[in-house]
Length: 147
Image (tube, rainbow, N blue to C red):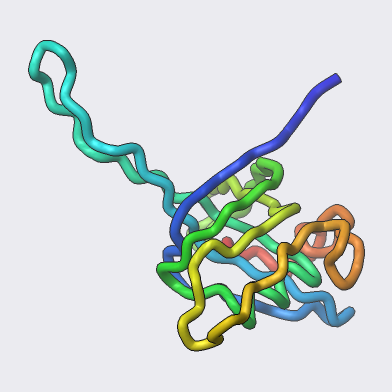
């Protein structure tokens, strides 16, 4: 048995970019930052804060929720799977990108503008359509843009 599960708690780096496939399926992408705090070792060595950026990919109902409610700076709890893919850049150089395909997202930033509103927890199981593998997106040679 094998497991591919990622849990992240971090801050959104920029507003989600959402596109719709010809079939009408929404795909959202945006970066999420996680940080390890700075600390000092017993011998006095200072270790600076380290920020890691994660490329998130959301499909269907999760993508639509992100489009409406997720903004730069928001704090999110994310569960998903790691996926790595390659593409050729404009110079023909093969590039690799690691992405987190999100299965579950919880918005943790209170929305002052929506007084009393608490965003619903979104999961792959309760999204508007079931999440399926990303077939069709990576199979399209015209779609060689990194997210």
